[in-house]
Image (cartoon, rainbow, N blue to C red; front, side):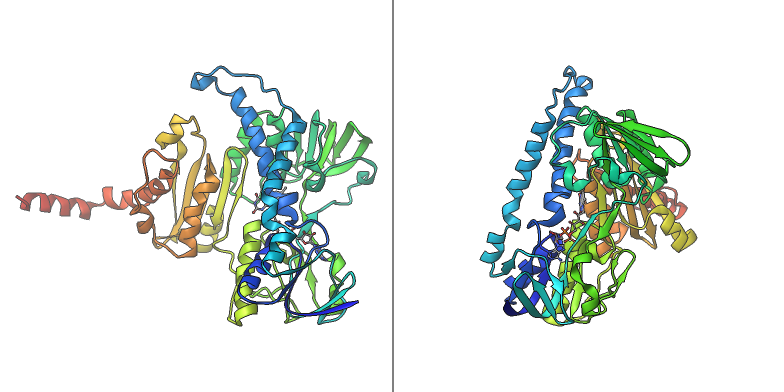
Amino acid sequence: MERIRTDLLVIGAGSGGLSVAAGAAQMGAQVVLLEGHEMGGDCLNYGCVPSKALIASAKAAHGQAHSAAFGVANAHPQVDYAAAKDHVAEVIAQIAPMDSQQRFEGLGVRVIRDYGRFISATEVQAGDHVITARRVVIATGSSPLVPPIPGIDTVPFDTNETLFALREKPEHLLIIGGGPIGMEMAQAHVRLGCRVTVIEGDRALNKDDPEAAAVVLDALRAEGVEIAEGAMVDHVSGRAGTIEVAAKDGRVFAGSHLLLAVGRKANTERLNLPAAGIETIRTGIRTDAALRTTNRRVYAIGDVAGGLQFTHVAGYHAGVIIRSALFGLPSRARTAHIPWATYTDPELAQVGMTEAQARDTYGGKAEIVRFDYAHNDRAVAERRTAGFIKVMVVKGRPVGATIVGHQAGELINLWALALANNLKMGQIAGMVSPYPSIGELNKRVAGAYFSPRLFDNQTVKRVVGAVQRWIP
Ligand SMILES: Cc1cc2nc3c(=O)[nH]c(=O)nc-3n(C[C@H](O)[C@H](O)[C@H](O)COP(=O)(O)OP(=O)(O)OC[C@H]3O[C@@H](n4cnc5c(N)ncnc54)[C@H](O)[C@@H]3O)c2cc1C
């Protein structure tokens, strides 16, 4: 057994753990990093990267099939599903060196490829190593939730951990779960030539603004995705190639393959948390605002901390705890400025409050301004006119933005900047956007906030009238 003493022990080499390890090592701390499975974690291997790569294949197929409006004859795309998966694997391989053991060892991090478990409040064991650290960061991520649906153990099913390695094209993919992962994969598969049925117990995309979600759902339905809402699953049955999902209301959905996308569960089982006095809650590890667990020397970040589960949140958490663990400075993780995007087509993006949240919180003080893609010249040129941007404003400052439409995930960046820095609408309106860009939507919605104040304002009219009579 090797005993190791270090400044910082990071458990999990995914988005959060790698960011902490890289930052801390480059700032001079001694860092040990444990990874029991693949370097890069979910995002690189089973999440963001493969999903966006598959979406890119699907977009290529969709473009071929829908080019006639641009004067280019439609073609029936010849999709090679296995080759699309090769593309996914190539994309992962291209990005993997950034997350590799070799790169981190080059940064001076001691990487141990084993699972870690607490054996006391101050010690973690990983294989033949016992590590004692001044500070420990748990960044063990989350896994697909497999709910105890009767029959689930008798049928073959995929999750995000197996889907991207599946090489046979599903003839009819049933997806249980209409959240962002389910909807992204539904559209990707329908565009790649599969039949797709989404089975959702509540409303699909129910964490998003309903008006914006409806734009996405309409688009997916128009492309042929069958979306069954209010279909709480009762049981599943069948075998490879013929699977049935029965809903409690009697509806039965039959397909060839089944994907479970019903949520995530925090990876805490292997950690033996009670040995370190670390408490859990339903969604993950209990943390305070500084991301400290109930053991003061131990932090939890990213998906395992049970809050917003996104790569950029794990990266943000890493910055928060580096400030506190390395510099001993007070630090708090905030959520009000964290954006997220669902990469369907059209995309759906949010930062800060939705319209409903702003009205609940601020009542009549919340002003909602909006601008439609249909009035953006670039969107018209590209025939991407579905969608809108809606900004929630209180006393001249944005408190939230919802965007649904082409490149919404890009457009939300500006509002993430505005919320992070408490910018005013006047600062957004003062920006000059290149014409014709989709990004002009951001400026135009800020303009929509000021136009009634300028154009419907009698004082402004009187002042302009007076000045016009006076100036030579
Ligand atoms: C299909 C899909 C698509 C997604 N798309 C996006 C997207 O577009 N944008 C976005 O922002 N987010 C997306 N996400 C979410 C994103 O992948 C996660 O939020 C992110 O990976 C969380 O990072 P993390 O560091 O908390 O955990 P992870 O990246 O999962 O890393 C945790 C690591 O810890 C390791 N580990 C676990 N237990 C132990 C242990 N005891 N000892 C040692 N190692 C351990 C695991 O093997 C893993 O490598 C997606 C997720 C999925 C499933």
